[in-house]
Image (cartoon, rainbow, N blue to C red):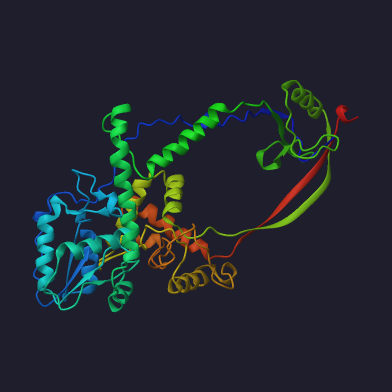
Amino acid sequence: MTTNNPASKTTKTKAAAKTTTKKATTKVTAKKKSTKAKGKSSAVKLPSSAGKSLVIVESPAKARTVSQILGSKYVVTASQGHVRDLPKSKIGVDVEMDFEPSYVIMKDKRSLLTQIKKAGNEAKEVFLATDPDREGEAISWHLQNAAEWKDLATPPKRVVFHEITKEAVEEAFRNPREIDMQLVNAQQARRILDRLVGYQISPLLWRRVQRGTSAGRVQSVSLRMIVDREREIEAFVPVESWTIDNLLRKAGADASAKNQFPAWLHSVKGDKGRISIPKEENARAYETDLANADYNVAEVRKRDVRQRPSAPFTTSTMQQEAGRKLRYTAQRTMSVAQQLYEGLRVGTGDQIGLITYMRTDSTQVANSALSEVREYIQERYGKDHLPAKAKVYTKASKGAQEAHEAVRPTSIRRDPASLKDYLSTDQLNLYTLIWSRMLASQMEDARSEATTLNIDAACKTSG
């Protein structure tokens, strides 16, 4: 009998995936995240924008950071999310007229919009600086249409930056553009689908399941996939199989853990491949024979192993890693990431954005950031840890918005240790995760040596 690290511990492995899968149900009660700010918008009073430029962003926190960067020649205010949406009282989509949406100004944004309209008409020019994604583009488009600025010398300008730093913001304002209607239409298509699916399926759930349940464009399809998978699990017929594993050690060595290595039954009489034994009585027979066998190393194989570092974070990989290492929910991760992106006060200086925009499906990194990371690695860790060329990672998913960057620190030189006195525990934990991932992504591949032993077991079964 020949074994590849043979063993004498029997383990029963039934392939029953059902043990880790919960049954799906059509009772869906997830609440949609609202972009509405707490409190009444009417409480906000904008400073005079006469002779100045008006800049509109989404959130008050982002407004404070951008305002400190731009200075006194700009008035920066927040729309606090969307100002227009489909009406709540009806479907708001004319299916017969090429799915034309009908928007209304949101009730809690009327007072704020009035002030934004007045401030825009008084300003020298208006800059729409909402987030650099489909949703942000749509918010800018809705603002432009709802405010109906008539006294502007030039149309509102769209500015986009992926990190809230002085360099990035000033560069964006030097290169404004028009609103990208392709991004706006992409957002509108999603919003219209949300409404068509939700308004037509939710009432059915109220009648058949429970009032208050909801259905959406994504969750309905996801639920179907879960149900299909559950049906596959229920139809699965478990098959009994056994493998044999053991811990071996060098002859004469003590039984401490450092001298032991795992082994498993690999082949019997030339039948190679990890052995799967269908019946317990057969497995017990092998176990008895192997317990009394003489083991000899028949072959030693060594090979070099290289492991490429993981790519910088996208939104989804950041959420997954934060869930695995920090036990953060996706919602908690995004909330903390938003705080890091919008800006925090570090030391006695102004607020500054600590990471790039956190909603992205791209793994690309700006050349300037790559250069900074490579310089930092060489200075701190030496040339041995720096590859000859910067590592480039392909896009994370089909259709990824490659104009976006990965989630990364705005400066790799701002290491976690330098921020520990200024960030909350959640903020520091997530920042450390993002900083470490970006740093590792540009370091040399990990190198190791893998050793495989083929061990002969001389026992009665094999003669």
